[in-house]
Amino acid sequence: MELKGACIFGQSGGPSSVINASAYGVFRAALESECITKVLGAAHGIKGVLNEQLFDIGQEDAETLSLLLQTPSSALGSCRYKLADPSKDDTDYKKILEVFKKHDVRYFFYNGGNDSMDTCNKISRYMQQVGYECRIMGVPKTIDNDLAGTDHCPGFGSAAKYIATACAEVWRDAHVYDTGTVTIIECMGRNAGWLTAASALAGLNGCAPDLICLPERSFVVDDFIARVGECYKMNGSCVAVVSEGIHDAEGTLISEYASQNLAVDAFGHKQLGGAAAWLTREVKDKIGAKTRAIEFSLLQRCAAHSASATDVEEAYQCGRLAVLAAVSGVSDKMVAMRRIDDIGYKIVYDYVDLSVTANAEHKIPESMLDGDYGVTPEFFDYAMPLILGEPDMKVEDGLPKMAWLKKVLV
Image 1: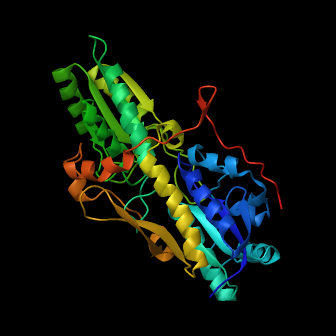
Image 2: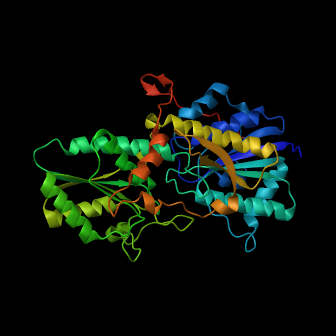
């Protein structure tokens, strides 16, 4: 059935190099749709809906919107806000319904990862429960690549490309002097090691890390230091890449070895970081080598200058197809990508139930893990197509142009 009304689009969770490409896909398709009467953007995700801070995207220039394709981070602002179980506290849901009714919102698109899909799923179920017709679609996003129900996530390919490139550059730097060094690089990844595994791609141009440590394996500090020592003795240097989420056999994060008081976000996730710095101190004390810790931190999720053209295009299509699906009657789904077994790389777009993706995790399969410190050729086959291509970026004064939205409040 045809459903006419306004739409709201929001961004949530950690940003990425291509999250705004998905926003552009949503905006462009929604602005062109005869069913969608007004296109609204929520400031800082679901908080913008709750606070009724909504931007009129129809007031934006077409050229500015197109620059979203090459603009990193979240143009509308993001949040980490956990909605309560509506059966225990429906305060937020009543406010969302009030805002939806006031602005005749019949379409809601939410761009994010695991927790964002949980938010999407809760709102969808509540709207059904109260009998308010609103088609709700999740648009996938996470550099961690840990969303269930899809082959991979927009944001991962570009982050993987940045990590592989930066690791190759660091490897070169680490092998300059005749005095050896131990370099430990820390990548993002709480429970899934896709990003850290991407460092192996540096081996495509001869700069492979010596050790790669993923959260899919329990981390043994003494064994790691022994391996580093062997590598250092044999080669005169060692480059190791560790995930921020590495943990011991009891589940204690290595980050917690350095600090027992890690901050916690609204979803109960501990704020990670510091594992590499702690490990370099241990290595220096026990091996005596010169050490250096490098934490890529925010760089890996906002390096649009190193984006993958494949990733940009897929992010855009995920946003566009969420709108096309909704206006055709689809709801309570997240856009997903399926890889086709064919010559070369090919995907098709599909839709998966929000209940499948909400709070589920997609970790690296055992077949891609090579012992405790490496990955198999299967990982290379999986990841290499995702980093291909360079976007045709518009440049001004030697720097990439970025979108600056007017953000006209309704």
